[in-house]
Length: 614
Image (tube, rainbow, N blue to C red; front, side, top):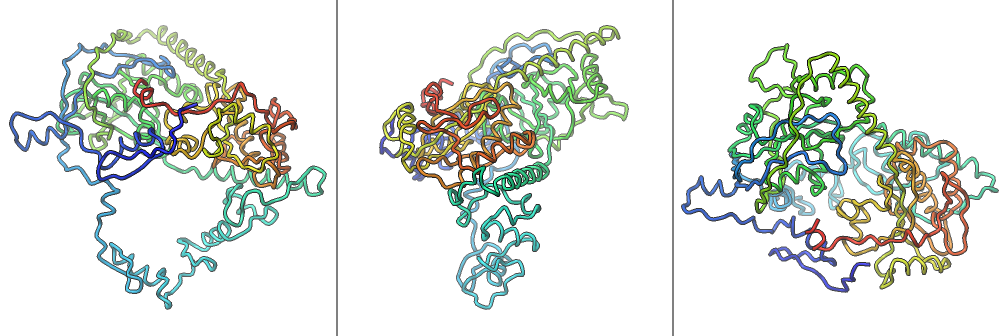
């Protein structure tokens, strides 16, 4: 167990910020991003000039060229390295984009002047149009205001959009949901487990197999879940893109100069290719989960990241380059037509260039990608405070380009065989589904995880509600490491971070592969949500998850879906209490699960010393 913080309150040290936190780790994470944090120290210059002052503001100390060192998730399929350049001295990079830094959004919004005010309630507005609209439509002090046709008759909220949006607002907020009266279109729109003041948890009676409407109700719930998940999958219309990033070690005064350096084949340049499934540009996880991003690590070592392109394209292995990410989507590559697979590999081993470095080229240029400096921009990674220069490891010499048709055919077969072996190894990795409970801190008290679970299991008659979280892990070791490494990005992690709850793992269910774990997770979540609607005496388990995986649910069989819906409608708890026995074997496991004390483990966030070590 982690040490108990007691009633100590930790306050931010950056004046005038007055934020307080119950845990030290929450304070440390806040102080790193606090808007009142002073700027980083820059060494003074012997003489002061405006140019020197601007350079001091944009100076970064760089350490080393990032080299493709293999990690636990890397493979060397389809990667060709170039001969490494000689180790240069520690350089200093100067960045001057020719524009002043902008005020942070949070500050800019709060300091905007409100020049217009409502003549009825004196509410301030920065825009005259918004002020007039408020006076005519929304101000409660204006008794003669004209309500738009899309005004809700119950809460008088003006719903933007057409009449269908108003109907959905009334259904979502002012209607007691009854599955027997829902139309198919409403089932597609409304989340199956939506709750509000009119539709609260633990408000319906259990439906048991001997009831007359049991079978019919099960079919309706399976239909509702199928319709919603199918529609949810179809609603994913966000644009996708593939982006190319170059990390450069050198001195540049503008983005255009850095772009020209890359296109001329300069030394100390590494490349990264990624896919963003939620928009155009660099994927947001490089900034949200920066510690696990190799781009962020390159920035910490002093390299400047430039996003060169966010075009939609299929990556090929081309001219000899040094790559930051050596693992590509091998399984997706094997789904391409055979002709496309063979062409991509053949272009790589025969030396077809990936980037066209010519200033002007004709329509016969065989290079795969043509860039312009209009798309180039600097990525906002943190500026390192110091330089820890390390000599880059010696890389393997580049392989010779192939010209013999026999050797090309042999190399093609060998590479496809290696890619297939990599996919097979990934498919055989054992995964798991884990179940955790998150009691409130006051419920947990001073007990250890094992003591709390024994007390929890021995007192099933106590009327107490505990949150339950279901998740999957690709390495089969229990709770996902993301809850511990990046707690601010997960719901359990945030609950531990703010000190409101404790997180205890109570069950680990091993699966054969990731696909099986995703389907089992979807089934358990549906059961968890459904049983939370049913009245129950004694201990109760409510969902801490907010969503289910629509695609994983649609991959489950009809029998599996009906099985978990029956359990949920009957109000069976996902965790057995006391002498209660498992009811069935779901996907080869005894379910509901019995708490195994060998699996009980508390999720404790790392201390400051452990964070610094890692």
